[in-house]
Length: 481
Image 1 (cartoon, rainbow, N blue to C red):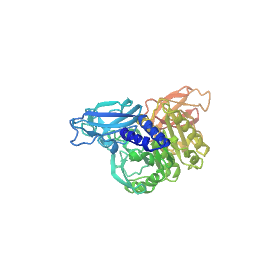
Image 2: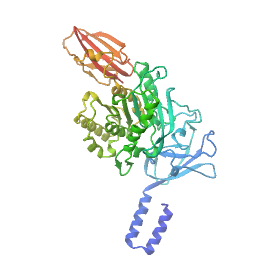
Image 3: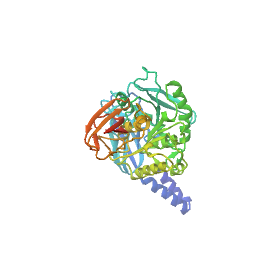
Image 4: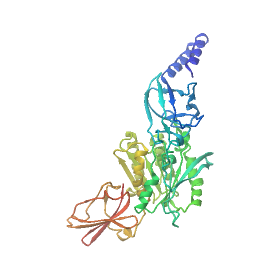
């Protein structure tokens, strides 16, 4: 409510209203003054800006929605674009768009730029310039050649909305007759293409293509765009009084009963929970956990990155009712630089899942010390999670042949070094062979009884290690980050 209108109400209240009503009006005026009216003035646009373009502001004050009418800047007689917003005093982050993340501001050459940041207080005026637009000043799509948009208007009957759907196909899809597992991922805007991403892309396509080149058999990935202002509603089955939610069940019904049958009809997809996964981060991590465990006959591979378990306490009551499938694999991940509550909730989630019958070897749990709540953490962490979730139950007969002589390898997923506990202390010489997912030997060495090997040169992916000590052979499976 404008301050002038409030003052008029107060003047009339002084004449007509009892003291009680006047007090309420005074509190209303005080609340209005507790927010800062900040003016944003864009006084320079790129020469390439189309005539009549509408400029919007999106930030952490409007759930990063790129095209809300209330956040559209108005042109003035001087050719500037401006908007006044009531914002709480303090730090803000924001960007300008032309109505969508596909037309977000960029560098003068069309490249990506980070969020703008400012500390604001009442009465501030910010003068700003837009150097370029990612989509028409040289910015190029970064999606790999084997990524396509199935449609930008897939109808969601359960929610009465339309949504863009992306599809990644393995590099050999057109030249083979094989079928492939399928991974459904949320926040599709952020997975493959920097031009459509919120802040930065995961580079799922490039990372999977690299794994494929190093022996991974391949997978189909289906990316589902989030609903912008409806994202929080769709990514939680439970409501939060402040942030919404409550549409998660309908959203999962859409994936399971509308989208999945369509994907299965168009592509050579492997069926069954052991070949079907779901993965997401933040609120996408929450809905992946909920959807994956709510449909154990559909999803047997569940990737949960930095999940928003804070959104509703009902998640814990729900988890106490779970009965995970015998073949289910779950990968839990968070960064050490995220909030303390994030780390505490992830550990609690891990503990509850173990108490509900999950076997430790099928429940991955990792806190990366330097990880932050961002795509720049989740993207590089994707290969290890994928390799853990979709590792074959048996490769090249290794597990079947040595099923009773398993070797404990750690850390797993591994970084530059892999360690193991010697099964026969006192062995003078160890012969070690590491195989990739195709069963090809990629590392061979002989060493004394040191319980550690250097694997820094191996690409990310799934590997098997055979250790020969005298007449005895042992094996172990590990993921390289």
